[in-house]
Length: 255
Image (cartoon, rainbow, N blue to C red; front, side):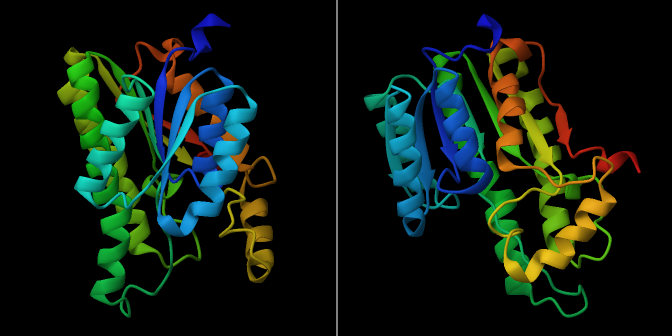
């Protein structure tokens, strides 16, 4: 359908070397977009895999290595993307980290690192992308939050992660309101439990069974299941959607 067609769009995806970010980068390319895949140098192998698969769709692609918490690296990557692929019109920010510790034992460094990557990184990415899009007069930014920004996950000691994702949701609404009259939409996707590399480690097998039992649909999501929502929010199909948080959680937040 033309409403979901991203042909002619240029997309920038952070965290594109693995997991949800990788699948969304592939999905945007399948929908017609040219894509810049951005991730840490340590994710080089995954970035190259993403880029190879995008080329197989016949789409233009470039790789940018950098840290989403570094303003200069983001600015350079976006400037090069626009020079090589065209004006930026779509961005999805999926770079993020997670770990756990009881709140009373959590060190400030652990707290700060999660907030730096998950919240400040999303702000700096959105800021850099927003600057380009505001200059161009149009664009869509989708930030990957989490249902953990809406609820507190039973049995997981992740006060820092939960706080960071709640901040992403409200940050995105704030940006959406600042830019609503200037052609740039900002929305969030809040995934439920998803089979990312972190959740598919052998030592998490029993915990994943609990996640599945706690989810009304009886399973956790595949990363690929975040692609449709991302294409929707990035496309003309969502032209009147800004400042929304789209829960993609298998019904988890209904219980």
